[in-house]
Amino acid sequence: MLHQSHQRFFVASFVFGVALLALAVSGFLVTAAQQSPAPSAPQTQPQQPQKKDEKKKEDKRRDNRQDSVVKQDPKPDETDPSQVVKIDTDLVELDVFVIDQSSAPVTNLTKENFAVFEDKIKQEIDAVDRREVPLSFGLVIDTSGSMRSKLQTVTDAGLNLIRSMQKDDEGFVAQFKAEPELVQDFTQDKRELEDAMGELFTSSGTALLDAIIATADYAQEKAKNRRRAIVVISDGVEKNSVVKEKEVLEAIKEDEVQVYLVGFIDEDEGAGSLFGKNGSKRAKELLQRIAEDSGGRAFFPKDISEMADIAKQIAKDLRTQYVVSYSPTNPNKDGTFRRVSVDVKSKDNRKLIARTRQGYYARKEKPQP
Image (cartoon, rainbow, N blue to C red; front, side, top):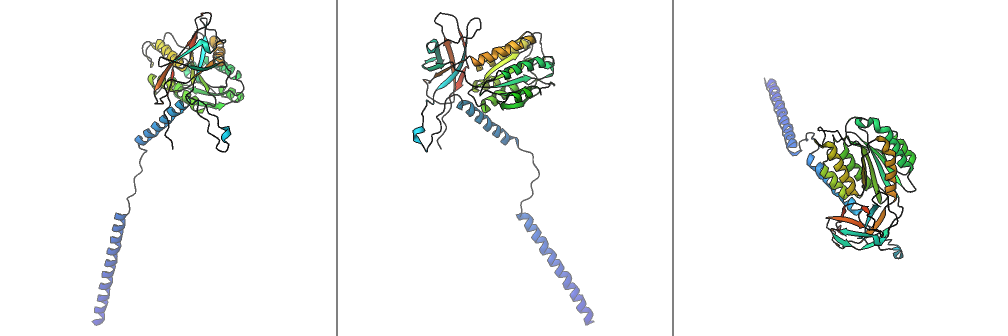
């Protein structure tokens, strides 16, 4: 009897001990769970930070555009003070193309023939030069389905522009359908650019405005040379762009990139495009404004056979420009847009026309570190 009671006591004690151990383990797990952070469920990337990042990129892009408007002091060589050369950081340089009434370039003008106005206030011109400067240009080709029959002729004209490149010139090639695509980035190698022209192919979609703003920004940010231009060839039908007309015109104001537009506009175009009922008329007006605001030029050939002569004219335009330099009377670098106009008069009283960009943004002073 005693032996049996000892066994029962031992069993009861063992069961009680196991129960206490289970309670202790359970309490430890609960405490650990309360102290440890719960694993977060997978989440998609929030949109607001992405928008802030895009805004930072846009601000940086505007700063880059503004920085290109004026000459900057070179970084001084601290090891050799005698090599420090000071230049006027307020100097504005305008590329000016001058033609007569027959659209022939005028190449024999001097400083006395020019007058520059900034916000309607006459400026004192420091210098006028007609020097051959290296070019950074881009060929931006519409390869939408509606351009299929024109693509070979357009490609041939682009090849002629590439072959006219001179020492230190550089170029890039882009195409656009539903969205713009960089086929060949900036290079001085003519063969690479020619090969890129051979890679163009047509497909559906036309994002004309997106292509203009994207390639103008690319040229402004990546070009090595001060004189920059893009040559955009399209049938002017706009269907797929995300940006609006106002955004493109504003970007052109900020970019120091001349835009040359060749538009094969269908005069019979009706409703169904971004430009509405009078599509062909509005397309022409918009392309003209974009070109003129940038100091470039718009061409509207009636036939594809005119493309070769247009390519030659664009090459001549880019090579026969004056560089007009002046120091603005308004010294404030407040980020505002300064509207610029150039008047030109000849000694023989011929009527002359000067083309240049419509203005620039006065670069804000960056805070000292």
